[in-house]
Image (cartoon, rainbow, N blue to C red; front, side, top):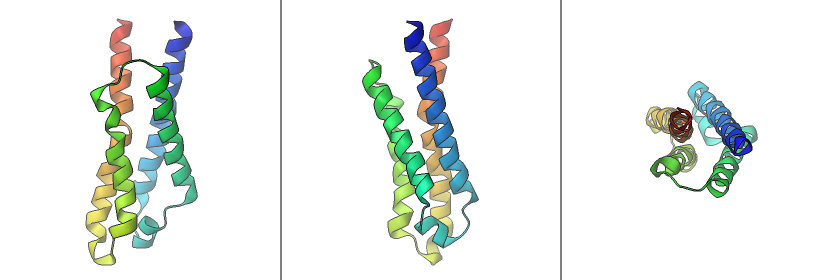
Length: 119
């Protein structure tokens, strides 16, 4: 039981860190070209986040309603690559800035649930 809990905490921390790194990248993006050409390390962070979510989904029984929120964040990362123009840069900056917060929402809610089970 302790190992299971430790694994849950480890996966939560990994997903929070990867989500935070992705959010940090998009909050510092100001240029249109930076939004179109996302660096490979950010894509690797996103892949790591997806794999962490898949691992959490298969290792632990019980899917929550908030487990699907990270799809909103992935969509907010991808849409500017295909549809952004210099004239609409501000709109897509807002989309990526606030849309990527959905990376950490599932982890925060899972952490809250894990802490409430501890009581």
